[in-house]
Length: 369
Image (cartoon, rainbow, N blue to C red; front, side, top):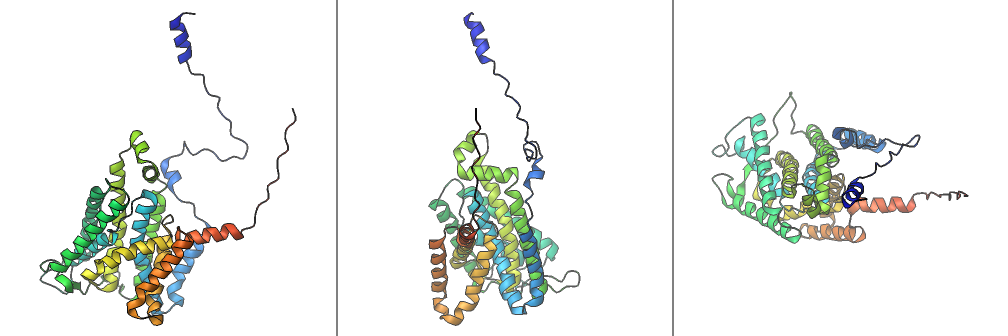
């Protein structure tokens, strides 16, 4: 055999045998379209939680419906944007409350407020989409500035942006009305329903929270979400495979900004105002605390952390002085993080794994030759 014939023979790759599926085995998902793989699987516990959430305002008092449940849903939606960035993108941003504040201020300036000389008086169905668009564009810009860094540098850049926006709204009177802010921000009356009432506003916040949660669960299973998790784990390898790492991260910031913007508009309607205190440094940290309390790896953890935070914020003042409220929040935060870095859901996973009945496996007999 000549040298050329030997090289041609070595270059020929043998055909790999086709593996036949076992009887009763699940078919492979490689041939399925992406939309068939992306939808999350609904379990019975999801239906139970949904039924309880729908029945809650009919059995609870208006105080718990509005002050606790509705506020938890709004703050949980903003924290969900941070959970998406941190848990699935590996990017911890302290500017999510800033993006929410931009949406709230934009809606107040474009719509109606107590300052008729500042607000443009646009109808709500025009002001709200423009406010969302402004906030998403700002989130994409923040992402474009911060995705080239990692770790503590990303946190410091986003924190600096949040502090800069706080001082901007604090010192600017021509657009943001300074430290007094913009007041009398109320949801519009649509379909003859007064959405300022506790029960209608609760269902409005619940619908937005369910939509945000469903979008996150769908996106993390879609090709974009899978690629984003690959960028989180090994950006160099994803770049070598042909993925645009910067574009994926900026798109993640934009989507997270949409979630935060919806939460910011709901928060402006909930409080009835937008002031510099709404976007202060304390609230930048509080959103991070809420996300970590629930668990950064689970989308539902943002709402669980928000419920715990609102309960402590509402009732801890009855036990300690108002000035020592942050001490209680910090103590609970340290206790949960030290016991479980994955938050409350991490504790639940550990408890279920410990107390669940162990399954005994019988060894398979060896085949005799």
